[in-house]
Image (tube, rainbow, N blue to C red; front, side):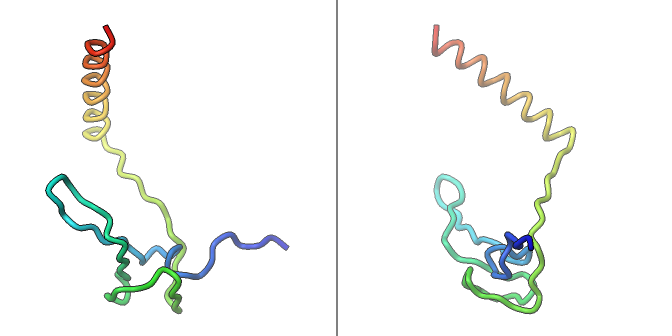
Length: 84
């Protein structure tokens, strides 16, 4: 029998989201978790009847690819100047 690698805890649930805090330099993970299904704070080892397998979603658009290409070109240009 094949064992399911996913447990039914909040840490592997699609409803579980990490909370971040805005700092002077960007955003920082604050080790708090929120269930968007039940609209409440949760512990990662909690479980409930609404557990849903987490699925990864990617946003791949032409605009994002263009931005990545521009960033890589910028990095190559500046790294060449640094390592001359």
